[in-house]
Image (cartoon, rainbow, N blue to C red; front, side, top):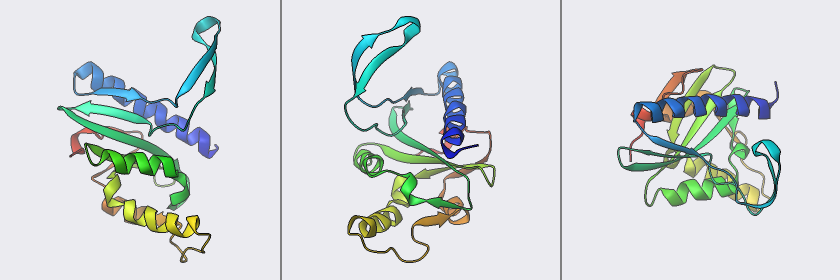
Length: 172
């Protein structure tokens, strides 16, 4: 299964969990979309459009009067590659921290787990890797990714896949 397919499977599970949160009245959840301009309506709820910018992080969640911005990532190997978090996603997660809380939900296919991690707990590592990349400098060996065990240690919760019930551990 391709990396993109793993990501779709993960987002489908998160969407299912979000429907459960909504049904139970625990949270309001929105799966975000990139900005676009509608160009043509087609039959069956389909349309043709043009992208107008980069997508925000994947989800906005409101629970207990608090706002959370969540980016979902899935990876297959023993280490999570920092390149999986795009610069515009990192900027959005960092910016929301001034008003709310930015999070990553990361699924390790290899270890069969999902970790919920506040962005500010791993942002310095991402920023360091990105600074090397932005200046075309070679990053120190091992700094382009982070071991799953280290990510687990920074997570607020680690769940056994396919469990995605992360809401109880979110904090602002």
